[in-house]
Length: 292
Image (cartoon, rainbow, N blue to C red):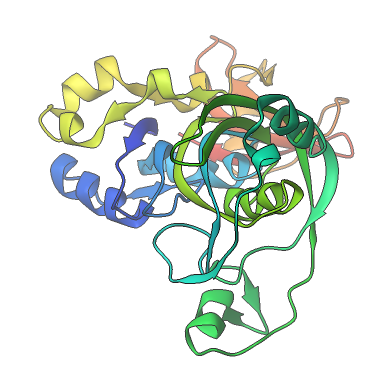
């Protein structure tokens, strides 16, 4: 079993907690994840099984989609409701007007620079930002370029002063920071109160299985209903067929083959159309990457 299982991560667990639970329940040593989710967040968490762990480097660059809830009027040190309130500010009437909210959300579409939150795992001088934050130490955090492809209002709770929105964005986008920035544009402060990731690349929440349900199933049931093998996971990528046994032997042994194709990842097949693994082309040279 080499590939991916899409798990609907529950609130309260870290991504590594989910990996540990699955490793125990499925009795598989090699289990990993890609696209880390904070404990507060739920939703799509691709879990990599056995040789599937080797495709992590391709999945971390995927775009994401989220549904987030922004609580107005309070700002916390972590950017979400798990932190300590460090600032409170009145919520103006205009911040709870649907048309104004939509206009503000529209302002965030496109490429922009975003400063990551201090409570994040980004490293500065070999130390994670949240480690500096817990010690009360200040450190310069450089902005990163992100892209917001779309951002739309889902609902507005005037009584609770909460805004729920859907956002599709590039990798590296911090929704906690986005929530704070939206609140600022609305003339107040805010913090993220809820987050669900609904999509990672082509993996969607509709494909996801709840962790507790997964733990009740046998490996055979998981494989037949919820497992995505490496070939299927890369179905949108190009394919290359090695037409001779000698080419196949050279490829498996790590020898480079000439292929005049665009630089990219390719599915590799033998002459009988059996899936062999993945290869990478750079400067018209095909190199072995993953062999099953």
